[in-house]
Image (cartoon, rainbow, N blue to C red; front, side):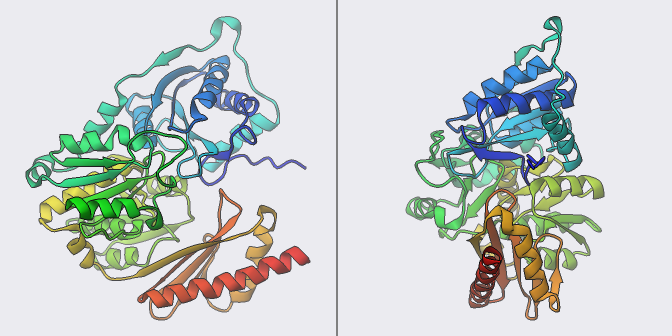
Length: 458
């Protein structure tokens, strides 16, 4: 029987012209238009080679249901999300596959508050799709296609309102921006120059084949950025993913940091003058987040992995700050979604006010060593593999919020969870020494390989 699930942990993703054909896009566009009931819908996209084709199919299908489409063209995901809420639209559709390889694309459906739809509303769209209950407008009630200019300028100005631009301007930071051939090059370099920074860009030409580096800004992909910073004596470097909602930072020495470490820096300075705040973060994040929250009398709410889940939990508990280990920071006074440019501004704001280098600021935080890895696992075995894994570790100190997180003595842990977007299991290990984190990854990769092979042979 065909699965009635289309949406994963972050929208709909698939191979272009295999999973995401124009026929599929036309039908899912009709289902989304039916869900929005003829509303005002923003449509934008990233720089992937397939995005214009998919936008064309989507636009026609949305207008056929009576929706008025406001086309914003190429733009970072958080800029489009801000435009939806700022312009009081009924919702939006963003064509992007974020960090996935170039042959992929995807669909993010956004509500009127700028946040991706919660699961229960995604289910309504899926039901319309599978039950063929798409409503088509009469010939004289077909939606219009409009333009919505100026969203990038509005977005940049909104970010600048949340930091001390004057103090940042006085420091005249030299920032290297690695846009990874993505749409982050349309906003971040210009915003930083407006904030008095000297900006050097690399990989700033938008190219949907991602010729310079993979779209995901992981440490192993950022060697060019680290070398550039050291070669020109820059103060800081930042790398974005394909749709610029995530940012990974590199200090003046060329050292690259995982996202939960820079998130912890933002958390520390956010909590300094506040009490009883709530910090929202997935179980994949480091214990460093909780250690800092405890120091300032604040509470951490742990969630399943997924930016949508973090955003909606922040809204539910009225949290002003959330973050992920992959470089996503959610700053609700601006908008409770991942936003790479907003994160960059917050980091520069801290550096300017403290008059400290990024390396010094991060060295002041407690040390946790993070190791990540993955193991291939066919989607059809994921559930069985997880059940078997839980059986094997049930007598240990575990958390099953998302996959299995095992806590050990000595402030070490490992999270093993099935990916929601790829046929893999992901590993996130941490320890007070790097060797401990590496050991945990290797030990549990071996255990998981054994379980996967047992499931395949049974």
